[in-house]
Image (cartoon, rainbow, N blue to C red):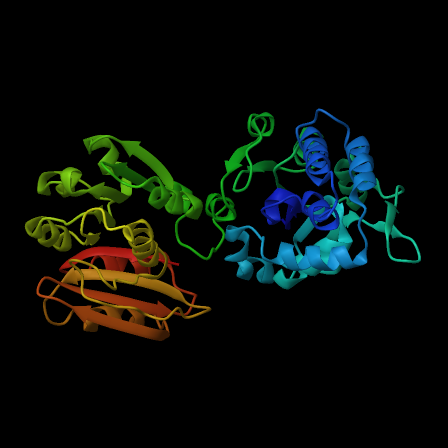
Length: 429
């Protein structure tokens, strides 16, 4: 059965509402710009939450724009920088599903097409409104015969398309949910990476904090092996809010506690702590999901050695060093995203370059002879091409990063985990 993906544009594919951004550009020097900005924003939210008809909201917003073609050019440049992070990193999905992905939006083709076409989305699969211009290039209105300019427009459009297959809807607003309400899509995913609308979340089949989560739930290949919103970060002790915000922006699930508690540490993939709240050996013994510790202070030497033996990397620095607010979160994210161990307290140093169109696998093992040969034997037996491989060691562990072409099965991962002396194995992306 064919599968189709109906994706909203504003606050879904992009982080922002395009008309809100356009008015900020067009009225940049207007004396009452803040008042108009607020009017536009209120009209947008009222329509998205179902408190005002889309027709009325769109009509009033366009009247307030005072924009022209030059402003649209500036808007496109701005929107290209505001594509939602999880959509941006999963560009390969759109390339592989270019026939099945449809952008359906109450926004306008003039700014949507130049943005989404960079992601292999076909122009004929982009459904949106169009502006009307005067001879000077000023926006004077829009095509009111387009069903997407009307209340229930997405419902009307999809009925007309009559797609046959399994249809998924991804969006943040009332008009996206209506597709499920009228039985035109199989499942509605409320997209919350950029904005959470309570009235929409309550009606959704799934709440989707990122596009990675959507791909994970539906078992599609994705840029990262595990959605960041599913990785819990436990924060204890004296840790600056600014450091925690950086991980929150990356999409990690933040939990803040005054001290380490067993149940929270056992669920955590990341631990932020200070010198006074650093974990004990007994606590780490049962922390099977813990991958990395960022300590805002100095870690005890024995603690660092024990963590290394458990395959847990540590980044630390002297207490109250101002640069820790950026330094430690960056190192933690570099390890989680790329496998980089540079400046680690207890792991050997490795800064591998990112290799595109490859899968990255991390193997941490006891530093005994012959492990790399066993890893490569698994790949050879399954006829998997290695495009890059890196090995570093210290007295306790060997740390291997292997980049391979796609096309391996679960059996390969199982065999790598079962190699004798393996401490940790992780598919990074």
